[in-house]
Image 1 (tube, one colour):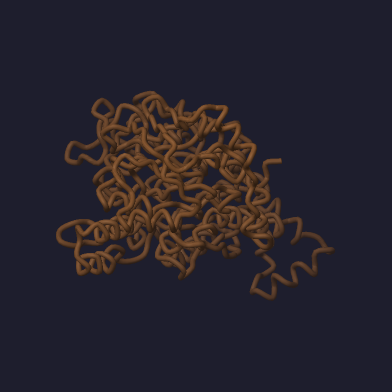
Image 2 (cartoon, rainbow, N blue to C red; image 1 turned 90 degrees about the vertical axis):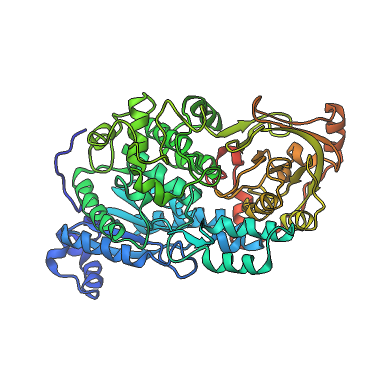
Length: 564
């Protein structure tokens, strides 16, 4: 790649250079700009700071550090906001339907500001789950030099000698309902689980996506597993800004970095770390924004190649802070690179290749830790995100199969058309071992917004039913979910998928060994039920939810809004 310096303000020159742009410059003067500033690059800082959620309430210091870095490196920082929805707070309520919608809103915000203001580059600061894919999709659409700054993980809470995180609380609710935990312990866990700022602490969706972004090369090495309260996070944000200015000089853009090989690297790291099911949905959307050919079947192809080498929650023991201490994502990547499971020639935002970035990282993990396993002693020989197909999900569904002794079940369907009634059935003790719960009309169109099901799955785990009860849905799961669960069933119920025609008591088979998801009902009977089915009226007819429901593609193609 030609890295010869070129005009550094080549985009913003459209609105600041020449006599005809005197009115434009006048508005910049109003904000304290000087004449010399018009030769500098205009660099956007998409700031996800908010006091909505602890994931984002610690972002302002990172945005401030990035602004200082941009100014020191010879750029003009232009700050604008991006919204967020707290998955942890919205979970189990109607508000959760806005979470996936926020991914699109965030990407629209970034594309709009960068494009409308002719910015020369953009640095995106985000925390909660959808901040990452939304931010990157906006970066890819705008396709100006860009870097992602993750807000950082949360530090663990402690109670009775145990590390706590947000999932601990959801599971404690289930334990309390099952009579296995006192009200006093539940209250203490509630108060202690989240001790400060940062995103949920396990290899849940936020940390999964940040780790994948580091593997893509769109974030700095080691940045994805830093804790928000630690000084190294702000230092990394400032360094990110300086790296971005150099990328602007080289005209190194996101679509130069996010190639098919780079996505393979990211998915390899997702598999190796035991990452979130949501990564499937988000990387389908990211690939779409990047113009890269990538399908749901590519995840299964990668799963068969890449073992799980990290012992991380939700199905393992450790948190992101432990992974950081053990060598972070660079150590994971170096293990994969030495095993031939990573493309070392992919370019990163620094201008270095992956191989160059990793050259000083040890070939094998340190012996004094067991968070990252050697490649010949993995947690699991194959990846954990399996794509299941069958008459219930001909386009594919996503199952997380780690942590299960036997990921196979055949049982009677327990059918629910909403999440709340399903949760009540679990908490009331009406779901028994061997049941297969079906939660439907919760897909991209039907929800709308494809809400996550951490409340029901957490309750199942808490009730001791995580291994013995199946749960399938056309909605999503939290990155903190584990158990016999299958999500993203496509086509969804609202689009006339087979999941709409399941009756109470029907036999359903989930078989992660054979990668099957089957409704054990004759085809003729399914066809008969289909004939009598009528699509439900839209839940929303105006506003952002209505727009999402009308435009969203199938989960099997990322639930994107611009697949025309």
